[in-house]
Image (cartoon, rainbow, N blue to C red; front, side, top):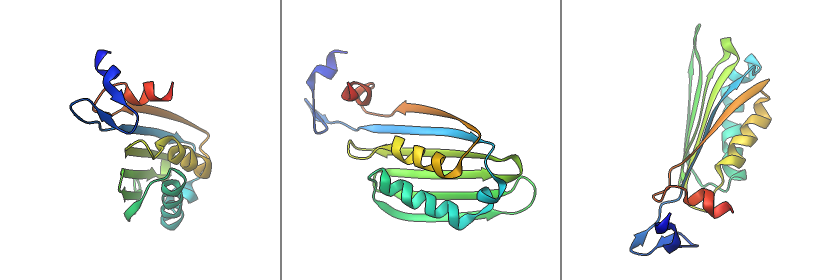
Length: 142
């Protein structure tokens, strides 16, 4: 891509700023039901995930929804964007979303930490490059 030739390390391109956006999100299956109901545990996991991924926590909120199809939602606002976990304990299921802006934070580290702590039987993970120049974060890794 011709425009990538103008990209310089440090987040600048000729003619303006570059937004480096990295989005890791996925589904966790076969997670222990007790963990998925534990609002404090999930909150602690998200706080530590932000730390290991070099994110700056601004605020964190949790909600517990009771009854069948209920669960817990944890949403952390970080300077770099956000981390969220939504759970459906009756199904042993959770979704995880980690989105960061900037070259200094690593959403993969946060996602992997959450998976490590929740111990799903299996999971599916996706990555989206949300940079202002598509492909920048991938080419940066080479």
